[in-house]
Amino acid sequence: MRFALDSGAHLAFPFPSSTPPRPGSAMSNPLTPAARRSGPGHLPARRQVLRAGVAAAAALAMPAVVRAQQKILYVNSQGGPWEAAARKHLFEPFTAQTGIEIKSAPGASFAKLALQARTRSYEFDIQTVGAPSVVQAMNEDLLEPINFDILKRDALPANLIFENGVGNHAYSTNICFNTTKFAPGSIGTWQDFWDLQRFAGPRALGRTLSQTIVFALLADGVPRDQLYPIDLDRVFASLDRIKPAMRVWWTTGPQSRQLLGDGEVDAASMWHAHGVALRDGGAPIEIVWNEFTMDRTYWIVSKGTPRADYAWEFINFALQPKSNAGFCVDGSYGPLNPAAFEYLTPEQALNMPTNPEYAAGAIEFDGRRMGEVMTPAERRFQRWLQQ
Image 1 (cartoon, one colour):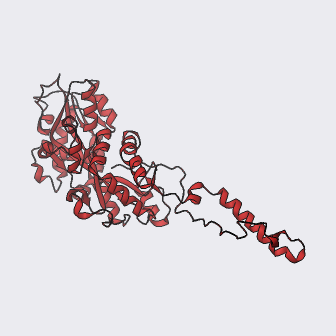
Image 2 (tube, rainbow, N blue to C red; image 1 turned 135 degrees about the horizontal axis):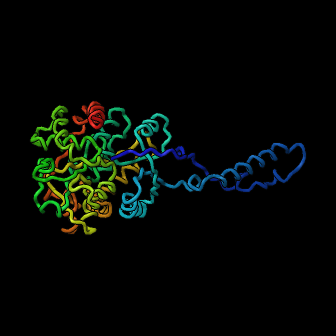
Image 3 (cartoon, rainbow, N blue to C red; image 1 turned 45 degrees about the vertical axis):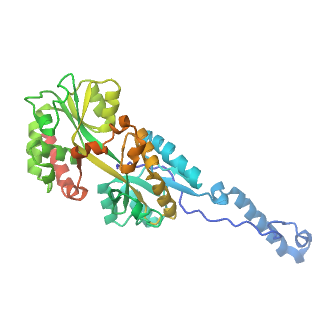
């Protein structure tokens, strides 16, 4: 999952508790007989009344969340379709079932995650990230361990657990091409995509280098089970061959969709949801469900948050097959819980990268081994672009 920094003001938690006055106390009935008596001999009683009045006024001035002791969970949101899908299928039903209110906390970063663990002041309790980010956070001891008293290990598919992260959904990056330029079914591999003699025409690839590294190696004939350890010399030799056809290194999903939809390029790598939107909007586009990379996203809980139990209750709810299916349909993601497919129509399942029918074509990242080369790869890529 991708971090986006937001520098807005946030509250520190947990809030202090407020204890109601006992019946018959000075606060519940400040005008006691002692308080009504006047004279220097009763000055302490007057001060007690004044102090009680100030305390009562302060209590009334406190936020309602303090007085009512509301149950709240702060979830980092990616906004847009993600939030709309989460609110409809996860947030609102969870609140109705548990009474725990969900509040969106837009903006998260690794730096904020680390700051929260150090200061115990939390802007968000829970978020979704990719596997490399889970590993990075684990290495820095920034995550709560999975609470298997709430999430029953035996009831969870084994593929959902990764370190201290719990899998929720996946997205893929696929070859997409214009079927008025190339015959339907003609491009089926990255070797085809790289073949500028058989399939001449402008190309676009994503700026996400980890994906491009995989595509370049596959195009050079590296078997998918021999991608690691990464051979950067081979990667850049392969990129040299596609460079003459490269028009754009896209950085956002809408940008890739516009490039292919407007005919600026004939073939591109594309996040599957944008390919689906383009095709379903009437564009002559084919989405290739072979040699596509699949990225899993995981729920993680911020280290030390006082609302960790609420977070695990929410994750347990989000993993339920029906909840997961609804979220993935509206957000154009692939459910990671296999049981979620029971709640999808065949038409909906066709657009899901985790569809069991596509399993043979999926390539999943080895986050740890890819991470080993990313720093030198990025430096080299910047130099390569300028050549």
